[in-house]
Length: 202
Length: 168
Image 1 (cartoon, rainbow over the protein chains, first blue to last red):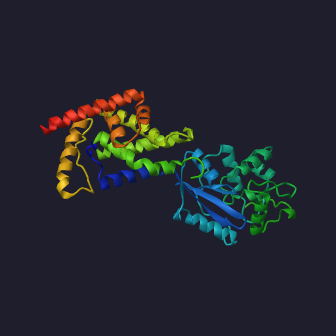
Image 2: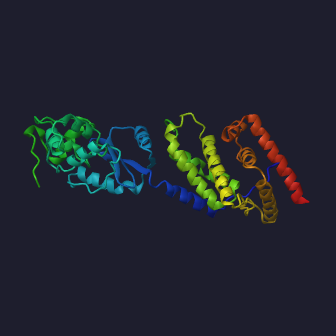
């Protein structure tokens, strides 16, 4: 015998429940997508707080894994990343010197955030050595830790860790690869071979 | 789909049936909506620790079942009526002539189901209405398959007797 029908939610009840469920995930939802940078594909992701990821050379799977590990709910972006895409595009064309985007870097340690905030003060077209950054945050002997913290920068380019170079005028390291660092420096007209520019006080 | 399942896909795939299950267990669309949210938010937090080969459907029902039992417990403590399954039935595909009979039967069934214990009700809904295998029903209820079969058997017996009483 077929089971007699039990009460079933109406379409409007389901719609309300679905919308409430979706909005309950707003605080953990993260939109991700990519842009074509001059040096290849670049992934972007943003939460309701701001841009939380701008990184190079990763697979979509690895990216989504990382986002899920941070207890976020990744969703492929449609127009949600339009502002970010536009600003990156302008930067790559040399038409933008400063990003105007909120960033969400809550996952780093207090030290990492301090280093990133210091790196964020280096202006377009300028560069600074690891020692200077270490001194500026009051940890003059922590150049190596500064380098590591910059290597963990989740929002490359927007926080310009590519503007931090070695003391002797060398490139220093870069998580995205030295060819990417070189390309970014070319966009900004930075030539570390000319020597490290001391950060100007503004 | 490459790699393991993504939570967004699980959310998309199962939200409607979990809502229907919560609705049929509670008989109340607002409570069911709350339970749907509680279930998926708990699932979301637990998801990173879930084994890759986990049965997502059974896992979600297990969480939903626990939430619903907690809901009944708090309703009992508040002294309010635990369920009212005799809500209206919405049969979009039904012919007008059948609708009143369908509705009447659903209401009668709702009253009968209301008298089942939560375990019997869960076993009945999962097995007979959602089509889960006994293995999953047993896992969700935290009992042996024999015990799950017994719950369904008892539930069906009560429903049959109850419907006979409703008819007379």
